[in-house]
Each structure stands twice: as C-alpha cells, then as structure tokens.
Length: 128
Ligand code: I3P
Image (cartoon, rainbow, N blue to C red; front, top):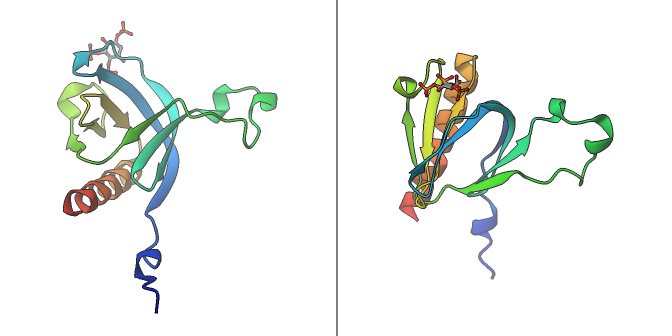
C-alpha cells in the first residue's frame, strides 16, 4: 500500500506584521531602512510582503500582492541581535547566500513566537 506518512505532518505556517530591515546582501553591508512588513512562513521559505496599511485600498486585492522578497531558510542562521539596533526585540536572520535581515516587534510574545518557530524550521531542515 502507498506510504502516505509524508503527507501527515502539517507544514509549520505563520504570518504577521514585523518591522524589517535588510542589512546585508551577499555579504555586503547595506544601509538600514526599517519598514513594517507582512511576513509569511510557508514551508521552507520566509516571504516578505509590503505592509498592507501602506498600500491603497485598490492595490490590496487577493492575488494582487506580489512578495517583495523571499528567504530560503535551509542553512540559515538565527541570532538575537539587540546589540545591532537601538530597538528592542531584534533578531538577525542570515541566509546561506549572505543576505541578512533584522526583524523586530514591540511585543515580546510576538517576537518570541517568531524566533521559536523560525528556529524549529531551521533545525528541521538541518536534520534532513
Ligand atoms: C539610521 C536609522 C536607523 C538606525 C540606524 C541609523 O539612520 O536611524 O533606524 O537603526 O542606526 O543609522 P538613517 O535613517 O540616517 O540611515 P536602529 O533603529 O536599528 O537603531 P545604526 O547606524 O546604529 O544601525
């Protein structure tokens, strides 16, 4: 009989509004530019969308929201990074390709949940 066990475990998924800035591209340092971002965790990717509040009502339609960028979490590194910002609750996500992002929330529980969820995805990918 077919082995369907690979379909049983649900993908971890999460979405929410975080403050985001990219601080490096391919290992090259970038100037910070903090912006609210709608962050979606789907499978092995973290996908960033523009903050819906910054869009006009007509531009905010389902299917009309192109991701700004997407991050492959395989091999990524996650670290708390409060020393890299004057803001509180900041962590840094570094991809294997040397792209680095800071993500931040004013709400402790929100940033903790994101940190724990991302770390568990990264750990799972490391074990594969
Ligand atoms: C930056 C801006 C950032 C700040 C950064 C400043 O100035 O104020 O918000 O980062 O600090 O350089 P500018 O807008 O002129 O580029 P944080 O909010 O994370 O502290 P930094 O240079 O110490 O990283």
